[in-house]
Amino acid sequence: MPTLQEITLAHSQRLSEIYRARDMRIAQAQSLRDAQLRGVPGAAKVYDKYDDELSAAREKHLATENKAEAARNATLLAVSDHRSDVLEDAQMARRSADIDVVAAKRRADDAANRKYDAAIASLREMPFSNRDKAAHEAERARRTELDAARRMHDDGLAASQKSYREVVDEALVTERRESRNAERGYLEALRLGDSAMRAARSVADQSLAATLIKVPEAAEVVRSWRAALATIARETNEAEQDAFARFRLDLESIKA
Image 1 (cartoon, rainbow, N blue to C red):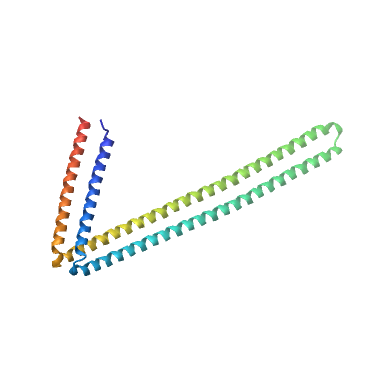
Image 2 (cartoon, rainbow, N blue to C red):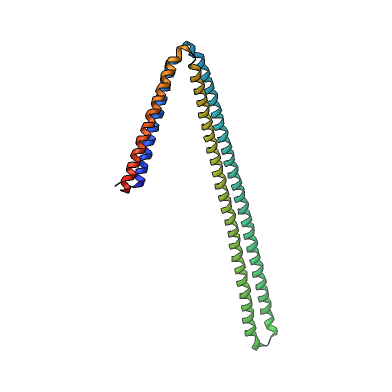
């Protein structure tokens, strides 16, 4: 028993095949019409005008595509350059912060060692019985200050790395977002260009057919072409109805 998804997919495929066959038959009918009429003296100028209109539409379409591609490339280049600048600045800022942290630790270590040396030097002035206790207290004080300097150093480096990572992540996110926007804009421009090209071709085709019917030598061919289009439309409609009828039966079979 086929699933609903399989039935729906098969229905979609049948419709796609129907429309593909319709488009091919329409193209063949139009090609036959043009082949018969291009050699007719009275229709030659009509086709010259038609060809000029399509040529102008194609040139405009190509110009639109080139402009869209140039805009996309310029945006992507600007986005890439901005990301590189941001990352370079972030790297320099991190290095500067790391240097400051290391220098601060060195100063704190030196200060702790100087205080310790001074305390040890002062032991000579103390009674012998108090020297051990004073030495231990000096060592403990030095170790406490050195540990504090180390924690300050580690926290500073961690903060510097965290800030750098945040800037890098934001730069990469911004680059991806702007790149996606550039691609979407490019594809939208292509879509509009294709739509404009199809519209221009449709207008040119309608104008061609309307003009050809007025040419005595071409009238019969045009009427035959229009009859072929009507047949294609009718048979396509019948095929659509059959496809939907089959689709409904398949759905009923699932319910049953």
